[in-house]
Image (cartoon, rainbow, N blue to C red; front, side, top):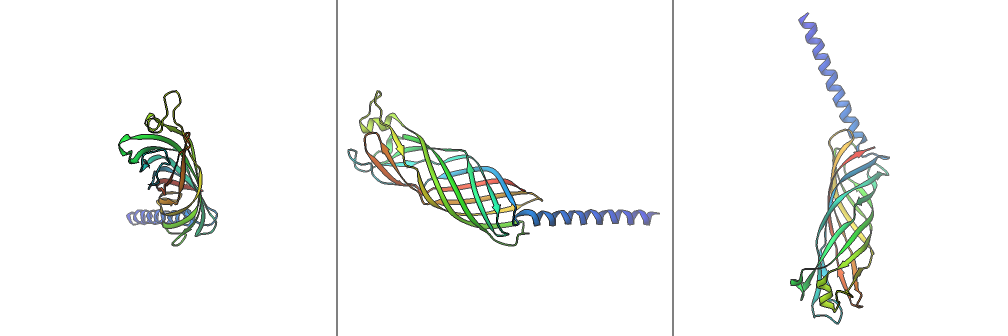
Length: 232
C-alpha cells in the first residue's frame, strides 16, 4: 500500500514536472517567433546632447542654449516579421524640455520650454534562437521630432528687447532624423517579458524668435527605456 502511494506521488511529481517543462518550452517558443505581436509599457528618459550655435545678431557674442532631460510614460509595439526581423514603433506621452541659457548667458537660467513628440519607426534584428528567453537586438530607422507649444520666459524677453506687453516668443522647427537602437528583452514567463533599450537620434533643429533672430543646435538625444511587455 505504501509502495503504491509512493509510486502515485512519484507519478504525480513527474507529471507536474513534465507539465512545467511543456509550459516553459511553449513560452519560449511563443516569445518572439514570426507573427508575434509584442506590446510593452514603462518609462523613457530623453537626454539631449546639445551642441549649440550662437543666437544671431543682435545678441551678446556666444549667446547659446542648453536643453534639459525629461522622463515620460512610454512603451511600444513590435511585430515579428520573421523569427529574427521585426518592426518596432516606440510610443510615449509628449516630453516637456526646459531650455536654459548657455555660453555668454549661462547664468540667466530658464529661457524657454517646448513640448516634443518623437514619432519613430525602426527595423530590428534580434539575435539568438527564437526560443531563447534572452534576445539582444539592434535597430535602425527614422524619427520625426515634432516640436510644439514652445514658450519663452521673461529672461529671454529681457535679453532680446521684449516687454511684458510685447514679449519675445519662440518656436522650434520639427525635423526628420535618423535613429539607431540597441537593446535586449528577457521572457520570464510564457507571455511576459522585460525590455530595455537605448536609442540615439541624429537630430538638428532651429529656434526662431519673434525678433527674427535664430539659433541652430545639434540636439542628438539619447533615449533610455525600460518596460514590461506581453506577447500575443
